[in-house]
Length: 352
Ligand SMILES: [Zn+2]
Ligand SMILES: [Zn+2]
Image 1 (tube, rainbow, N blue to C red):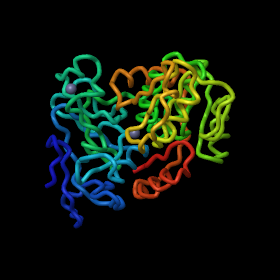
Image 2: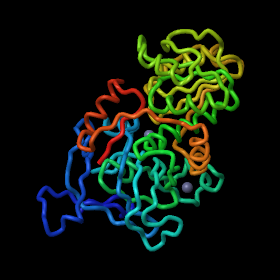
Image 3: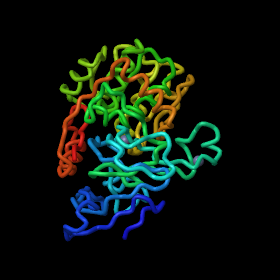
């Protein structure tokens, strides 16, 4: 038996299929060691704890953070681990304490899987910074599996207008993208560096809010640039290029530290550069001039449940549409490798 940190959602690794307890097993993609491919395995189906629901996974999007986990760039993951934190599924069983949700409900599970509710961050509406927070697909098992468990308090009902596959990328690319967008305040001219899953969602929200989007991509990535324009960007070009107008704010979604001074150069006096990723290569040193005149740099960590409630109320009104490429669960390694090489347009979604 391999215990997860909270004793919930534990699973057994088992290589020998047994017909007697077949229903107690599920297929999952398991992360065991950085640098190794995920391994397909039949493991014990998790049991929901007191406040948890058991969810039959219908779709799980692949996030860049999953790459940071499997590449060993994030410290101390649960091991072995089922990755995946953009999960959409249906509740098939629930713990004794579950009150809000019922069997048959379709819900989404985000990155923020549990908070303590007691620390100074939790008590000041900053649960994203909770001292003891647990994260889906990192310190808790996630959605690269046929089933997963989640604390009901951290699940979001999924608006009916979305299919399972379409909704999955909203759970992180959407939510953390939205939190990044909020951090830009009322910036009118908004730069977005790295036009992947988060950017393609947030560009639609920004356009709805009548902001102008300037999309920055890898050098010569004309496909991503035309994708950005198709989503309403007023300008798209290479990251090294100076945009035709000074920006009021910029969001850096790409995990590339070199982009931070470039973005600072592109923003006007008083402008903000928001770093939207959980991991980034080192930011090179830069002259103070780039920060002078009240420019600022900040990061976005995780999400709060309030971000989720706001975003899921807003997304269907716009309506935000997601561009997805589906892969069978067993091809999780292939989906990760395409994300790494930048071959995806929009988001990869695993379907069990
Ligand atoms: Zn806390
Ligand atoms: Zn994510």
